[in-house]
Image 1 (cartoon, rainbow, N blue to C red):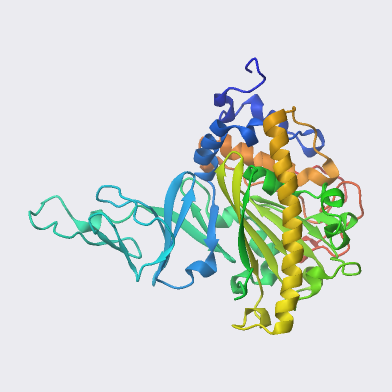
Image 2: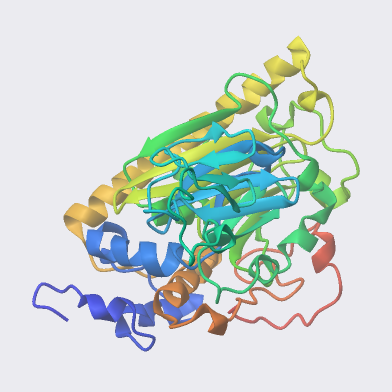
Length: 439
């Protein structure tokens, strides 16, 4: 450790580093992460390579690439990525021409199934094949075969409403990354949920805080009574339980969602086919590393985090709705009014979160107090999030990544309150009642 109390940079990426030791503990003996994790630009640069450069990172809504002909440009782990769809399916590529490396696109656009380099007009099909190299046959090259010069592919996959990219071939497939989450949330049938054609259904916020502070804030409910007094009327602290099994995510549920004091979450028509637990609950999942989803019976508030620097993050927020009147081309005036009530409530809550996370960033950056202990009853999801962060930063290869197992079925709340009165279907089989500390 240096004289000023900071850790040498090498400690950030060493598997046995003492830098991560407080995060390796169980939640009842664990601590928050070091200030450098949130405030140091050198850490941020390393994190872009080792964490975002290897994780399954959400880059778009599936609806943005529902049809061939659309090209999206995204930054993942410091690399510029293209995402597109051909008749054969979804594709991802490095945003770099195979001729002399020119950036192919600088923003989302329509391509009519052809990607053209603006420099020398090499043409690529939507599935990445080089289909034209103009004037290259003026003086033929015997060693040139267009089949050898397609765009460099990157891994892509989808789950529900999201498109994911991974730059690493060693990373386990998305199916393993998600763990039990697709089964846990299967009855919602997220692949059918869509944004409505309404003003305000999508918005972006520029936040002066590290992306991890935003994800952590979403994952814990310790702050609820003081930061969100109105939210606490519909998502009451005693009605919170953990909602997580195997997978690279952490979560909580409010069961039941209350409407006796505020009905903002209950104004829209619910999805069809939900069981008693899903129909009465709010599910709040932070999917590592950069997605948070808040799912109510009638809608989803989805947030995709885009880190720009150690102290700056873009929040790309979208409301999604199950098949029904909200996804019709022209929802009724009454539904538009109901949506505005819901939208306004979420934006007010998110504004409160932004304010407290920016304050946390200032305190960490300017004060830098040593990390304190986590509260086991309320902050176990943070301990899980911190361990995932430590693993991504330190593992030499993600082929060795151990997907966290989380709570055993039924053990959704191990500290300080009664069992969930309406656990999700995946947690309803009998288990031992002996108290355990989740991994």
